[in-house]
Length: 240
Picture (cartoon, one colour):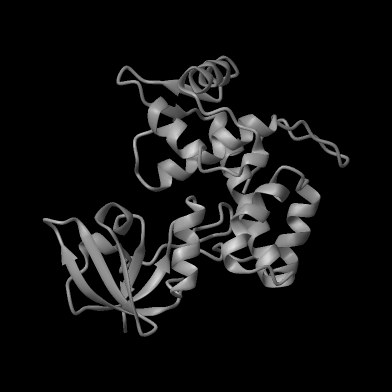
């Protein structure tokens, strides 16, 4: 992956502020989930970041930050009030997402950090990883294409499986293999890990209740229940 153009050679680089990187990471995640990025939605999602990130989440704060990022040419606001990445901002967004997901792989695969803590630990590391260290981490891990939660690592050559769909499209009685789960909500992530609803796990769809907007799976001998909205963020493929 080609990094942001303002990275310089010789071991030094120009980096964006931590706050800006957090905004770009959040916008990119919402883009991946095909969710409209509005100021309200952005504020809601920023509240899920660890408190140590120190990101203001009030609507006036978020609006002011987006205006500043627009002046820097990183984002634009459309006529429908959506926030979109510019051609300048997207490489930066991909870079911070790549560092975050490599950091998740690093702490899980090499350091033995428990899966439910990997997301928060990666937030502590992502801003400090230099391009040189990023390459060494990727090489050491064997150039992984996904994070521990199944999400693609930008620049890894990841190729999506055409058979993978969100669980809101599943049918009762269907046996599936979990491909990726949402990682932004720490409490939800802990629930998934506690019930072994993680990438690679085989599960049976017990119920897709559209009127009640509830989906339940039989996973590792347990019934795992979550909302229909959460089901749109869990990807799975039919068991071969």
